[in-house]
Image 1: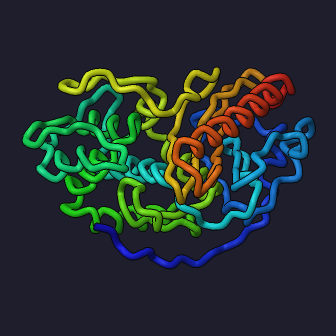
Image 2 (image 1 turned 45 degrees about the vertical axis):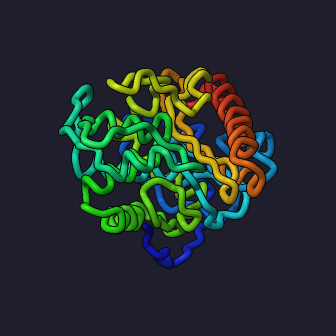
Amino acid sequence: MSLAPTRRQRVAGGALALLVLGITTVAVESGADPSAASGGREAAALGPLLDTSAIPWPEEGQSAVELVGTGSPATRGEQRPVPIASLTKVMTAHVILKEHPLRPGEPGPRIEADPQAAHEAGVGGESTVPLQAGRTYSQRQLLELTLIPSGNNAARLLARWDSDSQEAFVRKMERTADELGMDRSTYTGASGIEPTTTSTAADQVKLAREAMKDPVFREIVASRSVTVPGLGPITNTNSLLDTPGVVGIKTGSSTPAGGNLLWACEVRAGGTTRLLLGAVLHQRANTTPGEGIQAALASGRRLITDLRDRLSSSGTGR
């Protein structure tokens, strides 16, 4: 079940997001809350040494990048709401951790898998994990199963555990999006299977900025694999974790959404470690999920490698 989409006020900005990226020193732990994202205008520069005209932006869809603490995301492509598929689970995990905080290494409460979660494991056309009805899993394990192999049924189970129903949980997701200034985002489910869950690259970077403040979330999305009792080793769907510096975050794909990627990369510049965030949406939409995600991963890798290398060699942050 899902809620009908909530209409939001579509607010356009005009920030030149990363203009000061080359001269502002910000640690990874920065809690700065940059202003609203631009409405489809790419930033004029990424600092004195980094002109956006040289950045290998994807030729299709929409993208956004931000160095945490330096302002709004720089964007490319029209920032219009598009289906985001499993990137939805970043908001699901963020809300769960807000409502039920965990310390690093803490498993959290035990949660019983209900018959619905077990039945959904056999539903075709969805990304699910083999949960067993009556078996208990820790909150941490269900978050891992939601974010690492992208289990739709694990995400919906967490939503029901938190709010008794997915519909009630979605209202929390919507309120959180409002609080974060995600004015072009609409959530209609906890897993992302609904094409009515839509967002923009700039909004997803806003969410990433907030979610990555939580150390447990950061640990999970940076994990290349995890072993869950009864399920064995589970591999992360995000193959970019093999790219130097990459510490997350999430992939998502479907036929209407195309390939989507929300990423985070730690960059050394001027002796300081910074967090570089980015989103790539709507790659090869209306083809196949496999084709879309491969395009998103390739686009994301080009962006990450280019920005990481040029920031690291520019002396930024002196």
